[in-house]
Length: 242
Image (tube, rainbow, N blue to C red):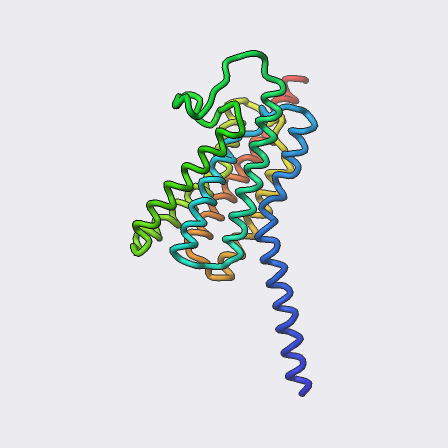
């Protein structure tokens, strides 16, 4: 009787831990963007943050939702995608608001201009919403046609994790272009690293599709590279000031 009660207690604790891990997976990905959001609000400047990070995550998570439709893995990962999409839209809304409030009277650019030179550099938040809507509708149409194809579904999953693996690359490139990490929240990158390490472990333990843990490992490498930029450009700035 005691042994049975002990097993039930262990199962209950394990269930609570599993539920807690799932909550961290769903909402933990949002946390890195809180300090960056606050930094942009505080400085009224978006130069240090690459909005292409938002592009990468929006594409990755929209594709992941359609991957889930074709191959129904953990519901936790589906919810994580929905939460991340909403977070990226919030980041874009803030960036557009800040840029429009500080922009002098210059020509505005919109998605309807069909000018690739200004792709993802549009003036209005509505342009980004329109792009996301169009991309989602295109994915829905193609998925509806090819849902029975295992090759298509697996390709969809691979594309989703490929985009997600490139999450830090826009920020890495922007730092290189600026030769500085000023305006970028280091806390955001540290939380990226912690989150990527956690979720990669989660994917392995829960035997998620291989695409997910490969993506996580690639993201960890990029996170480390960005942190090395923080150290390098910080050293360089101190040398110039000295």
